[in-house]
Length: 415
Image (cartoon, rainbow, N blue to C red; front, side, top):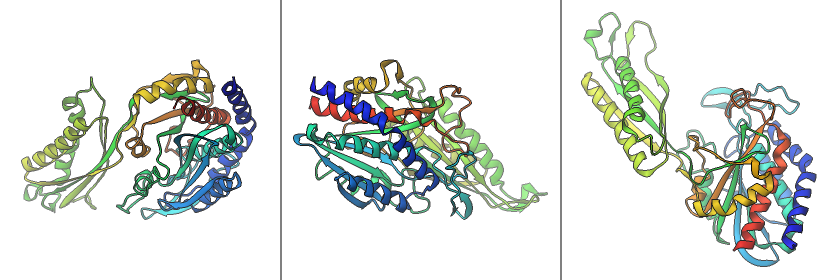
């Protein structure tokens, strides 16, 4: 009875704070900051958490913020996470809080935009903290509110960052976290709908760099050189066979995509080298090893057959985001109570990647998706994440607050 009354109160408070949640989100949206540059953002979050009476640590993994709420009774330590950084994208959406921020990124002038919804993640977690602190005396255990920088990566640094660095700096220790929950808004899922998946949920990501070295010559006399452009073209086509011919797609999907190809600077010169850059998405350790091996074999041997040479470098990115199966099954009722059973739907794997995976690798975790699309729209018409036209229906934010609160209360009472 007491737990039922608590959840009823929380549901009412989550709805009552909805307008405040939207205001926070819009402020962050109008003032976006790239990874490891979230200084204004972190200051607002830290000030809010301190005002609530939480223990606050700033400067975690450069610009991250961690707030700790201790309940009045003994119990588990639960981490709730939101990411903070924006993207180098120039916004086209005509809203009053449109971002006009610009920066120089990778030697190019570009806008800065919350084009993946991290602004909403922060606002929802700030609201969750405000709701839960009102019930401090009824909580069992400890809650860590983790506001994480640089989820989208940090260009050109070649160092640890984001969730990886937070884990390395001990964010899951002192006190030791027992379980972690995170959410991600989705612009192509109806507002208020929750999607989840047990087990592997989001792909692991790696990057590959292939340098094809030939012999430069006049474009009129190709027989006098070794053409790295023709060779690189054959390599691209060869790489496309990895997924279609080598990966067991009946078990797990995979992706190998070339996103950049550069070579030459004049119409009548066959250049000396061509550079390819691409992404790898996999969902298992053995699958990952297979794809890495085949990229190297295909590139090197096609180049060899053309009289060229291919140098292949593969850089490891985020691990697979894995939802603990037992935990997910146990917490589904919490999500259903927040959104309605008909609005909680198991989904297919997502080939996008998430550095929440570093938390999930250390402690049992559940990462779920909250809809942010106008229910009148069709998913195939809704602008995708990481695009200039990305936009959100904010009406379901309170569902995310309820979901976080329910997960905390139910897990504390079950453990």
